[in-house]
Length: 303
Image (cartoon, rainbow, N blue to C red; front, side):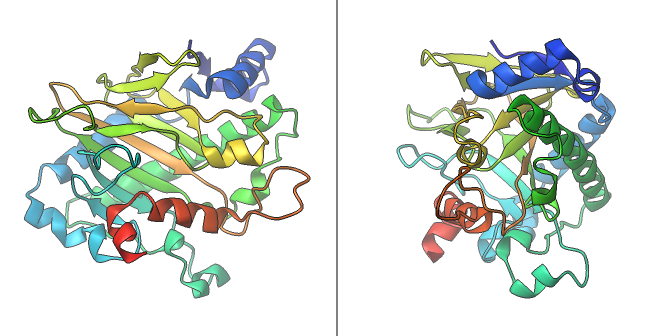
């Protein structure tokens, strides 16, 4: 089962909560997190802003189409992402925005796509709402990483320095009703494990997300606005030499639409994510860029 934890209990180091956290990190790869400073009203607001954007015509959305860029900022049309090579490209739409380096930051001179400027649509309050939510979500993710560090037997500050310039990506996912023509290889998002570090997912409370259990069965996971679904990616599994589990999940799609807002929280570009004691470094930035090229359809064609 996927446990529900309270953020305040984790923050004060409650023994039972920390044990549950350790079990979830090692064996489940998913947990639900309630009681954070991000309120249900804030989550509902950001979902409503994304909903307004996705309700626009494709002509309007195409003004910020990421397919015209060499990165992943802006709108991704249906079938623009393929997380599973054995399935068709996903039928969802997305809007991606990311952490931007402050003016004068020396990393900006390197022109790295993972720190590319954001593309913002001409939608009232869109940018301000998304940026405010992203800052709040990154703060929650930072605290989660501190709890994870303790859960794997490290100091709470173990990951802090690695996230000074996070390759953080905030996404709005729009899952329409499952197309009537959909077959067995059609998904809102196909079965996959996240390839980053930590994912902090807010949802509109509608069903759709399925998590694969260790016996191979699939379990639906539903969380109301204000309760986060937390899961861990392949990068963190590698970095901790399997101390943290990356778990497959999917969205098949149903009769109604669904919106979700994941924050993919990843370390700074030059962070060495190789397992402890490895003779050869593995840099987080090139690892992430390679996975992007294998997922975004427009980047596959540019490779």
